Structure formats: structure tokens, C-alpha cells
Image (cartoon, rainbow, N blue to C red):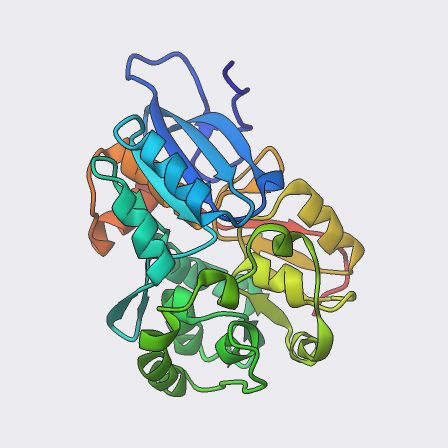
Length: 323
């Protein structure tokens, strides 16, 4: 049975309507929690597309089975909960588990959101400058090597950024405050870290539904803006986030209400929100690939599609207190 269309206020997506073009289908296969699954139909750039997300609760074998089943039957597959590769400091690093899953598909393109992270998220930082005023703003970026476009854009706008890759991915109490030092760390460690099981460096399955702040809370308390992957934020943030701005994506309606109850001032998602939930970057990229019908896309092509679709950051004030 077809799911109901999404609301219109989604930054480029419109409710599905009867059009002549065949229905496209983009599916995110995620090793995250199945509690976050979703399926909707939307219209993008004049084409109807069905967008789905299926979580495997940390089961990589099941994820591979799903990709194998979908191969050749859908227009694009997104990898959720892990990356095929990350682009940092001008280099591409393939992650062991993500690359293995991507190789399962023989006919359908598989994307992980890296193309949009390098384009859409740069544009988002630029668009938010007037609202937030990045210069000298204290920003905690929980993980930067997988969102190097955002990291570079924040540095270019002279934000005071704490890059938390060593803290949150590796559990080392070593904050990085300089982009060039982050580049050095990436070049030294990513060749090794990329070979580790994803569950060692990223919350998967049920870990996405539980918190574990501990001594990492002080980094959140220092920051005025908390940016980056929502699953790192959810797992390690302290109970109170009064007056904070959150810049992220992949938040459900229940996540929004939780952030409201914890005192967050402003929630900004880089991707469209539908039925109370913002789209994961990998699923949005898979959707764009499904609609345009080709892969890979160059950065200029992504930017042109972003402009044509009218994709905008989604801004929601949760509490009146301002940072």
C-alpha cells in the first residue's frame, strides 16, 4: 500500500500528484535502528519518487542481503549509519564496512551522502551566516572528517570550531581547534581507522537510541552551536542543552520534542523535513540520483540540482532562549 504524500513545506519537495513519469524509488539501507524507518512518496524536479529507509539494527549481514535484493529493482540505494568513503583534505578514504556493502550492488548505484556533504552543507553554512553570525561563534563539530565541506565552510566564516573526531569517534580527550591540524590527523589516522569495524567508531543499532554523555559533556557546555551527525549528538550530549543551536539532520519528530524538552533554542537541519522527520543525507543523495538518472555527479551538478530543487535548511525555534 502506498504511503501518504508528504507536506509541501519541505524545501523543494512537493506533495505527489498524478504525473506521466514513472515512479522512481530510492531506498536507504541503514545499519541504524529500525525504529527510525520511513516510507513516503514525493515529487522532486517534476518526477515522482518513493523514498524509503530500512534499518537493520546494526546487522551488516542483513544490510548486505537487503542491498542484494534491491539491486536492479530500485533506482538508487543509500548507505545509512556508515559511509562508503569520506572526503577529507582533498583525499578520499574508503571505509572497510561501507565499501563491502557498496560492492554488493552490481547494477544499482550506491551512495552514502558524501556528494551532498561536500556541496549542500557548504551552501547551508553560507546561507546561515546572516542568521547565526559565524565569526567567533563557538561551534562543536562532533565529527568533521565525514563532513569536511561543513568543516571548511565554518573555518572560512571564522567560527571558533572544536573538531571532536578524536573525542567522539575514538574516545580520546583530545579536542582539535585548527582545521590544518584536523587535516593532519585525518591523513595520519584515516588509513587505519577506515579499516576498523564501524561499530567501534560510530553508534549503530540500539546505541542510536541511548545516551552516554560522561566526561564529553564539557565540550557541549562550551559550545554555542553543536553541529554534525545527529547520532553522535544524541548519544553523547548532556541532559541539558539550554540555549544551544543544533545544526544536523536525520531527526525524527520524537527527537525534536526531546531537544525541545532539553532546552535547545534552535534546531536547523540541512535536509528537508517531512512528516516531522528530516531526511538523512544518504537518502537525499540517493533520491537525487534516482530522479536525474545518472551517477556519479560532479560537485557543480549537485549545486545546480540543489538550486533547481530549491533545497533550503529547515529552521525551527524550539525555545525562546537565545545563545
